[in-house]
Length: 82
Image (cartoon, rainbow, N blue to C red):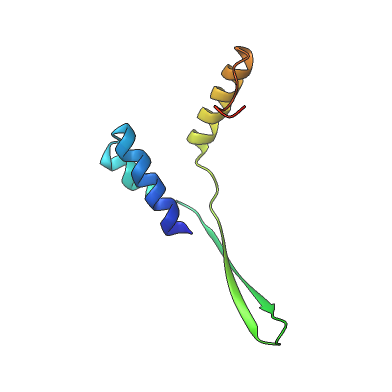
C-alpha cells in the first residue's frame, strides 16, 4: 500500500514539476505508527496483518483547512465531482 502511495506521489510530482528536494521529504514521514494484528482464521491458522498510521503534515493540514474555508466562503464546490 505504501509503495502504491509513493507511485501516486511520483506521478503527481511529475505533473506539477515538484522540486525533487520537496518530493524526497514528502516520501519519508517523520512519524509512523506500525501495528501488527494477529487474526485467527476460520481454519484456525493465525495470520498477522500489518497496519500503518501516518499523521498528516501540520503545514499541509493547515493549507488544506485554509483552502476549504476559502472554497466555503466563495461558495465553490470542494471537488469537481460535487
